[in-house]
Every structure is written in structure tokens, then in C-alpha cells.
Image (cartoon, rainbow, N blue to C red; front, side, top):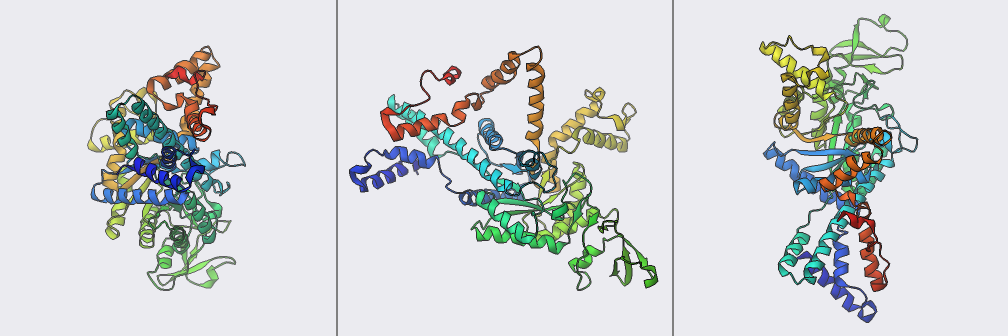
Length: 532
């Protein structure tokens, strides 16, 4: 279907119905503006991207090599540039998403200044960033389509019908930069009602996938820090229900819920759930509670908490702040129970927060989950909190040692040393890092790989490199050689920053609205013309 011509024709009919008073309106310009504004609301985006995720999940179920990926964003421009780069290098956005990290919002977007990842930033900043990301992605659509419209006008001016048809085909088959965002709602920012209200705002902003964790909301910690406290299953399921209700209320029936468990690294809980019969969720949760058997009430002191478990009375182990301890070594069992319970009660995808990137460890848990839920799939955090180099070098060291290979030339505790960078062990470790995502998707059920904080680190690294040279001996050459010249050579669109900011789109609109008298910014004296 020729969408461009159809929209132009529809606009022409609407203009004609209103007679001469609308004669200044050009139907093709209307069609162009409509194509540049395909998504009118965040809900349009949420419904569209939810459909994409569901198709991708089904494709992964058939073929585990069809996993998906994303990078975390803390600003709309960062998200926009990622998608522009993806389209430039790969020609398609298929399988590539964006991730919205609560950590980065806390560290970079809070009015309080940089904060730790403890849900103490403004929760309104979460839907605000979703809306900002999609505003920038839609602007990328407008800009790229505007270039195609310019090519169309040039082809017509040259009476080049072959070129005109080619450009028209590109317009009609245009692939949007708008992709799914998996958005972090932390532990829900309060009770289940608070979770529901925030989820609605996030969905209205365009989120099709919300990731929620099973920590206690008011003492939430970053997944890679100590002091994590989890909640009983009933509390977590209430929040999953709240999110599902929010999706359905907003008409996003395919909305995706990612249930994250922090149980692997969490040794504490805040309360004992009620158990009504042996083997129910409360009873299963309580089997993991640490404590000592008591034979009589004389062994119970004032303020102690006692539960009945398996015919025995157990005095629970508690910290001075009242938090209750789990038995050591039960993290994996609790993770498996968390995941099975979440999938049986409304979640679509899982997230297991681990302390290291180890395919065998993840697969061990996923295989147990899949005994109950065969199509269980994970979203996995390829976290910058892991020392990937050291972890994988140690994994290779351990594997070689187990195989009987000599590792006497290596010091396991010092494998991060630059002295090993050119070694055979380092090369093997790098090969395993390169293959990690494919291997983990094939063997450990990971549907989606993400890096939570990549642009936090790339911004710091690139700024450090520029500052070192610019304020040093290189002066302006540091910027020209290492930034602008590379932008030009690599074909980065943002070298023409006026065009990237929407200046040419604005010029088009001025011409639509004012005709020949429009005062445009893109004339011969615009220095952006120096970039061709």
C-alpha cells in the first residue's frame, strides 16, 4: 500500500470539503507531517512495542539464537543516538530495545543530586524519562523522513521517475526508531496502590514492559550491594497484579511484566508470611527462615519470635533492627521458588540478579525452573558491577586447572594484571566474554540481554579522554582529531548538530505555514553546510 499517496489523498479530500478558506494548505505537507508523527500518544507506543516484544518472545521460544538486547539510557538524546547508530550499522532495529535503569535515574536525574540506587529519588522522574526517550526517538523518525522527503522533491525536480519510486518505497517501508523500553519500577515505590499508580503513569508515557523486584520498597538496595531485604510471595504477587491491572485498564493487553528476584544475594526478610496449611507459599517461604529449635517456652526470651515448622518450634534469627535472617546457602532455592511462583501468577519474564556472569550458575537455576515452567525466559543484567575481565579469567583458570592443564604461570588472584593481557588465558577469557550472550541464551534461557549503565561509563571515559588532551598540550586539536574528525569519518549524523536538533524540520514547517516569506535558518550562510 502506498501510504504516502493515501494520506495525501485523504488530506486533499479534507481540504476540499472546506473550500477556498483552506486553499493555502498543501495535502502532501499534511501527509508528511502525519508520517513524521505516527505515534500520537504514549499508549500508541506502548501497544505497538508490546506487540513487538510478544513476537520476539515467541521467536525466541522457537529458536534460542533469536535473543534480544538493549543498552541502558539516562537521557533522550542517548537513546536516540543508540537507535540511529543501530539503524545505520545494521539496517534494522529488530531485536534491539532500550533499558531504563532506576540506578541511572537516581544517580543522574534526581533533583536531590546524585543518589544511591535505593528508591529515594522522585518516582515521577521515571515516567518523565520514558516520555523523554520516546520524544527523542520520534524526533529521529521525523528527521530521517525529512531527508527522504527532500530526496523525493529532488527526484521530482530532476524528473527522475526511477529515483522517485525508490524514495517513495523507502518512505512507505520506513522503519521507526521507536522500540520497546524495559522500564525499571524498582520495588514499586510503596505499597501495591502506589505501584499501580506509578505503573499507569509509566504505561501512559509509552512503557510496554515493567520490571519489578521482590525487595522491601522502603529499604530497597541496588541489586549488587549488600543489605537486601526480600518480601514474602503474597506481597510481591500483589504488586504484579497491580501492574497487570494497570496495563489492562490502559488498554495495553499485551503488556509485559518482568519479575525480578534478588533472593540470591538477599539474606534478610522483613516479616513472616501467614501459612494456612502445610506446603502453601507461606509454609515454603518459612522453611528458609534461620533459627534454632526450642523445646520449651523457658528458652524463649522477651521479644523473641517463634514459628512452628515441621512439628517443631523455631526461634527465628533476627538482627537488632528486627529483620529476620534466612538460612545460609538457601539463595538459589529461594530464587527458583520465586521464579516459579511469579510465572504461575501473572509474570511474563524473569530477572535473576546474580553476583557474577556465569552461564553454569544461571543455567542451573533456569533448568530447575523449566521443570515446572518449560518456556521460562530471563531478562539478564550484563552488569558493569561485575569485573568481567577478572571473572572470566578466573573461570578459564579454574576450568584449565580442572582439566589438568598447567596454570603455574598464572596467579589466580592477580589475573586482572596487564601482564596477562597478551596471554593465552586472557585470549580464551575474551572469547568467552564475546560468546557470553549467545551461550547464555542457548543454555540458560536468557531472552533479553541488557547493560544497565553503559552510557554512565562511556560518558565518563570519553570526557576524561577529551579533558586530558584539551586542557593539556593538544588544545583544540584534541577535539578536532578525536571528536569532530571521527564524527565526519564515521558518518555520525550528530556532526550536523543543528539538523539533529530539528532546525531543518522547523524550516520545513515555516515554509508550510508562511510560504515564500518564511525566514529559514538553513540558507547558504549556515555553517553546517561545511559538512556536506
